[in-house]
Length: 489
Ligand code: NAD
Image (cartoon, rainbow, N blue to C red; front, side):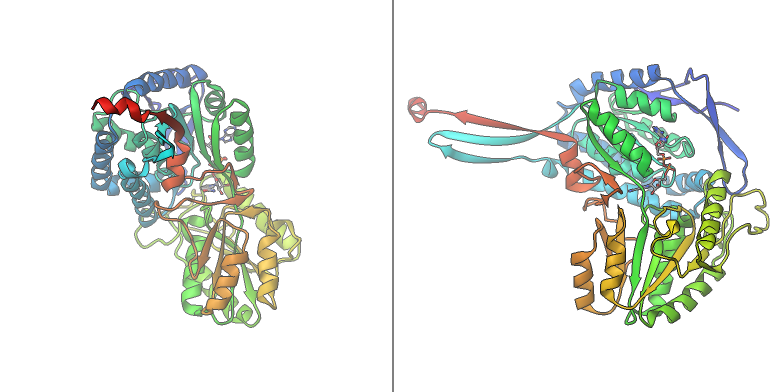
């Protein structure tokens, strides 16, 4: 089996790595490829190529830079089915989910095509007599993305299109669990005829990441992954003087009020909790019912959990694929048991399912744990699997208090037909992404992805104007042109 290659300075290069990991299909446990754990020298090679390319790339007019993005959009759109197939193969989600994440990547390319407008500075004539002041945005230099396994196509695109449109050059380090998607996408990037070194790809895991964190020529790092790693990356990269944004893990609560449309709510909550096998940073993992919503919602969600069609995501009839690895499945099953040991009632038990034709796959079926105690570890631990915990309270205030006691702050949602309850929730809930009758409140590309608390380290988020701010530094110019000098004209 050949090892995957890195893409450095416009060329596909074999890695000199002494260590490799196997990339496997989570639905079948079959080996798909071997990914190199690239050494620090290969990171340095990519950074040097990017730093050299930056000298000219920053001078290319933004109107010309975005032409490459228009071309990339066309290529990505023409290859949606092929790339979606690869995402499903290595990540396990359904083909529909894979195509949807790719469309979210493309949306970010579209927004970044607006850079000639988005990157504009501002100015004011006559800040004093004969003196004008201008603020320009200039690119930083070389920037890098370190990505997680759960959205192999979309997540690097929260950053990459903005970075290069602003005139930076770039390095992507995909998750070692799902490196094939970026191989496909870089085959398209290779067709753009970009100047060599503008976008580079280096595969690897911790040691490769550490080389990125320590490389003096990398000016900015965008990370998405688990909170312990986010915290580590934020502190190490910042200590090295870099601009850093780190999106971490989550434990997303949603509140169901008795006046919610129960049929719609159940469908949306089931999609949020069990879609992508619960491996979304915006997956619902706690449903807090208020008053009499408890009984109706619990019955309906139990039925939805039981009926969800689980299997290989390549099968169009399947609604939920496997989780990413065998250790991940074991961890999820262990956390379910911990919930039961802590006193929760297991209403639907998805452990050890038999999936016909996919016996070797890493499957956990949708699971429901009811009567979760607010203090139990499971109420605060990110499970990252298709497990929904249920809690029942009497008032909206009690429900919001439960949401706000969490140390996570990625997303919180409310299901109701009351505008007053919606406004109170939107105003008081301590999370950066809020859904009202929405189960996965993923901001569109023209809004920032706004995690709070332990779900985010940094200040500027990914996507939209935040990405433009993150990938540029402001330069303020104050000019004096005495009036008498112009008398000659
Ligand atoms: P992870 O933290 O294990 O890995 C993410 C990246 O960090 C990978 O590229 C990996 O190679 C690297 N890495 C892992 N351990 C490292 C270490 N010790 N030192 C340096 N680098 C290291 O995350 P994952 O399991 O791939 O992804 C799932 C996690 O990502 C979940 O916690 C999920 O909530 C989170 N996530 C968050 C968002 C968000 O927007 N907040 C989006 C997607 C996923």
